[in-house]
Image 1 (tube, rainbow, N blue to C red):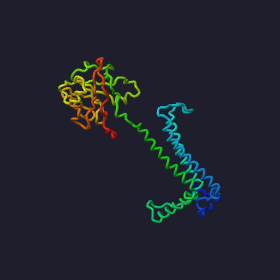
Image 2 (cartoon, one colour):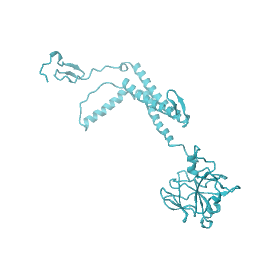
Image 3 (spheres, rainbow, N blue to C red):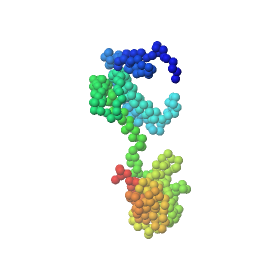
Image 4 (spheres, rainbow, N blue to C red):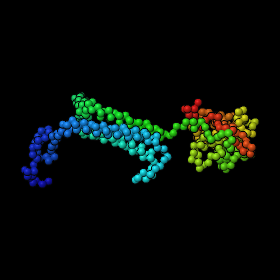
Length: 350
């Protein structure tokens, strides 16, 4: 480092600050202290303070209206609708309105809080010396006193309009999260209790797409069927087949132990739901000699010769049976829907 002396004109001089004088020193980075506080117009003019109060309240009110708009968007716009909005192109009006209204709701709360702090709350800068991480009783008392002083200086007790609109905005914003529960899916209503099967519906082979006839089902075979009219290109195919999938098995009539099962069959051809009553997995493993079907997910086992009752595994109840017959053209047809909901139990069942 050079030993050349610094000219006296470049040496620090004594500066008057809000905390007193900083003595002359060779340190060019000496703390100059805080500048003297200058009052804002709101500090000396009550009319300006009232204008700021109305501005803050207006922003909080806009937040409340945006939250109401968010909730209304769920009711107004259908989920599958697409519209053109310049310059965004083809978008979902539901998603667009949800993002816009929720963004405005949060923005106006933040903007109102910032404007409140900058115009009405105290802006006096306070410098504190560093202290140990563990606060002393004196520091705790000072923090509590500062908090009370800040609460008083914020005028939240006196500025009732701000307080009321702030509480309204903060109370309405959480409702957005409650409305989002709709995205869990539509309410099932009675859809879980019924399927596409009805009296006169033909049993259609899942592989060939042709109506099943008794001669198509030999003893000991396993065939899968779907209701007549349910096509794979249908928009609701997956939701319908998940309830209506059917297992067709032909058993010697003398081997059927359950009387109602025998009455609901046709010449030993029985039709049971393919959906396991445990968690809804499709059943496809059939033991010809024992007439047992096994669910591949959790090994629930059902006896198709005895009302499809559970003989092993976690399934809670037997597989529902579909009553079948033969129409005038010799095709197998349903004589109604299942007498109970298919698949696993649900809390509304009973």
